[in-house]
Image: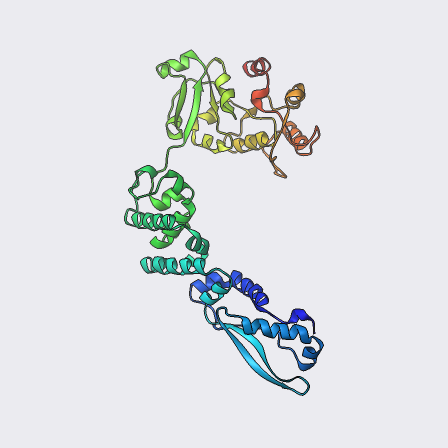
Length: 387
């Protein structure tokens, strides 16, 4: 018999770790069949004779063991080795004993105590809370009390219409709640018996959504006169959508400083600094009636944003996103940290598709990118102003 068949306390611990990982959430609900029995590798007489020192050491370890649970000993009367008392199996009578064996007592007791507290307060959570075992076991007391208080307040104020900083819950601020939006909204949806999963935090909680702001520069004096001379506008997308302006074209640029560098262009405006948030343009009806020009970084992400933008403004044309612009500024190239990999971008033109594939395939080197603000402004402005 190989020595490895003798299960000592360390071997039991390994087996309990596997059981605990697989079942601790179920056990928190009260499920499970107890006692949990772990066989210790009972040898035959022949096996004991062949591995006598190992068997004796194994017996000694179990005689010295003083851990949680129970060891069942059996007596064997062997012709050659005589009567032997051998550890047959370890019995664990509840999850707390398993946790004690694994050094998980504090975590288990916290999870069990908090599960009982929340299930008593909100019975609908009982079957869901085990899925949040790590929250129950590991949250500092302060964070757990904030979570409990936040759920209580939201339950009794389902449509408060307050911003996060207005919430009268001690210790809860924007940073704390932003890191726990899905947790709070998910639990609250269950507490209320909502059909949704809480994916929309503001809808689930009734907390007021902060307005999504867009930044727009008006590039012509005649247009600025309509706004009382105001040329640089940051406003909620809903208000931008209501503007009535005598525009004949709109530029959309990926980065802030690029938009700030624009000079005057007759009857034109420029949106800036939205990055991937180009879905907002779908909420501005008047853009669908105007020529739109997109200028992004010359890299895989720039083309991914352009493709996304065309879902909302399919007539958008790209500017300075061509091979000649890229190759004219080789000395200004950088590298993308995390390029787009394997994405199909069906709304690019044939020429754009070719350049995008060349960038993906590292035709000119690994992860090549040309950031739009690196292009000399004299070169760029001629292309922009003359179209």
